[in-house]
Length: 405
Image (cartoon, rainbow, N blue to C red; front, side, top):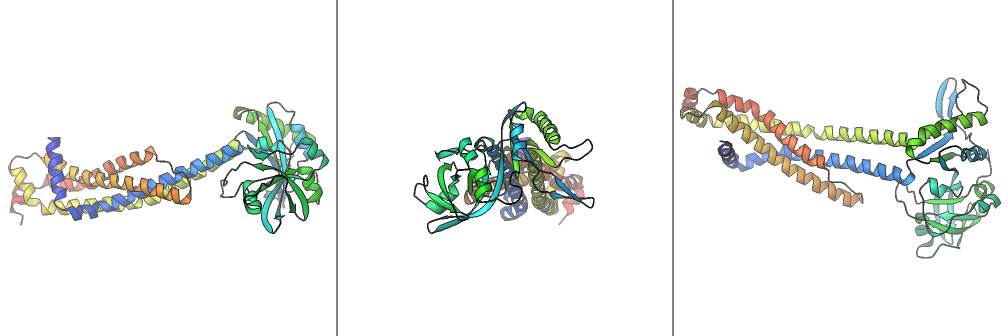
C-alpha cells in the first residue's frame, strides 16, 4: 500500500515538473537560509570559544570600580589597584600566578617604516596569564623589570610591518622617540573576538613604560590586573579572597562599595556565548519567514491539484478506493515536494556556508543541526501544507466529482 501510494505520488508531481520546482523553491530557499544562519551562528560560537581559550578561562580580571556622580552610576573610573596590591594577591590560596598591565598607544618607528601599536607595560608572568608563547628570542626578566631595562617583546604584526624578512632580534625601534631593543617575538595568535589584531602588541617591563612612555598621572596604578587560578572550579573562592584582600588594603569599611571590580573570565564567556546564541536564533527566525511562504505555496498548488483532478478522485472512489487512500495520496505528494525542497536547500546551505567560510578565512562547521532542521521542516511543512487539500480531496462526493467538467 505504502509503495503504491509513493509511486502514484511521484508520477503525479512528475507530470508538472516546472510547477513542482517553482512550488518547492520557497522551501528550498528557506531551508538554505536557515542552514546558513545556523552554521554562521556556530562559527561565531566557535570563534568566541577559541578567543577565550587563547586568553585562558581560569582568569580573574581586576579593574577600576564604577564611578558614581549625583547618584548616577557611570563607567569605569580611574585605576585604583596598585602594583603592590596585585603583588600581594600572589600569596593567596589557589592562585597560580598574577600579572598586571599599564597600556598605551604609540607609533613604532624603525628606519623609514612606522606603525601604530598597543604597548603593554607588564610583568614577565604576563606570558602565563595571557597564554602567550615566545617564538623567537626571550622574555624580559624580573631583574630587567626592577632595573627598568629598555627591552621589548613584539607581536607578529609589528614584525611584518617594520622588519619584513629581517630578523628583529637585537634591532632597536623607537617608541615615542625613545629607543628600545627587541629581545623577543611572540607566537602569532590571530584576530580577537571583536576582530581586533591581538598580534599588534609590544610588551615591555611596566617600570620601563612608566619611566619612558607613560610617566604622568598615578604612576603606581595598573589599568587592569590578572589573577590566574589553579583551576576553574577554584575561581569563585579565589575571587572572594581577592575581594577581601583588596578591601582590607584599601581600608574600606562595611557597607562601603568596592572601589575596584573583580570579574571572572568564565562569567564573561557565558554572557558573550548567550548573546551569540540569541543572535543566531534571531537570524534563523528571520530566515524562517521564507519557510512560511514556501508552505503557503505548496498548499496553494495542492488545492489547485485537487480541483484539477476532481474527476480522477471521483473515478478512484467509484472504483472502491477508501477515503484514507485519497487523503494519503495528496498528503504524500505534499510531503515529497517539501522533502525534495528541504534536501536540496540543505545541500545548498552547507555548500554556500563553506564557500563563505573560505572567502572570510573562517572555519564553518557542518552541523548535525542542518540535517535535523531539513528533516523536521520537510515533515512539518509537508503535513501542514498538504493536510487541508488532502481532507478536501477525501471529502469529495464521488457522484459530484464524476460530473465535474
